[in-house]
Length: 202
Ligand code: UDP
Image (cartoon, rainbow, N blue to C red; front, side, top):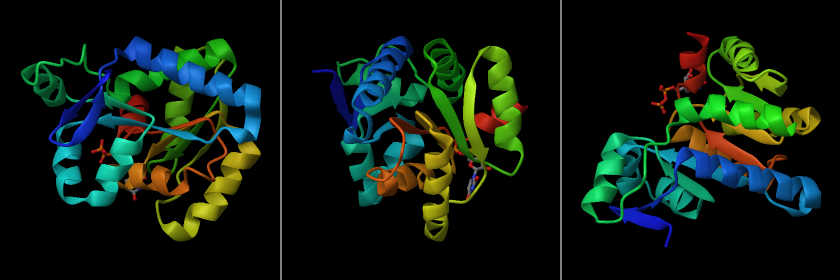
């Protein structure tokens, strides 16, 4: 079994490379079968996520039902070792985003950057284009996780013809935003990335 349960929270024991290969498969599957294939959620779990999920049942359900759950924090990797079912390595959102951008550039997948303060996603997009030449940024938009903004945000993403949507609204808001909108999200994969745009934008 690829998964291990850390205090009731599922973690998939994949390397970053394996996680990206899996994301690649999800995107190409949707590209082949288009709208029939629902958007899939990818979650990077750290210790704070596990603590929050212990008391937040919606957040717990969202993690345990996600298509892919990778260990963002070293605390999670240690826990999996202690449980005798070790995750091979940390797979952080911040480290994975540039690699995801390279995958998108190589395969012609379109990346949408949602969230963070106004202007930050644009700076992060510039940085990602420098790191991954040829990358197609489908769009960037700060928006807000407020439910009243969902419909216009989904419409923007639809217009942008995105394959992958990264969401930076902080945990657990970004994961719950994706979870709520999964059946309507017009993309193959959606992933919460926390402070990754801020990090990239420097
Ligand atoms: N954020 C946002 N809208 C909100 C709350 C947060 O755009 O209502 C952004 C914030 O600007 C930052 C990111 O979400 O870019 C969260 O970063 P943080 O490091 O707090 O998240 P964590 O990594 O702790 O999940």
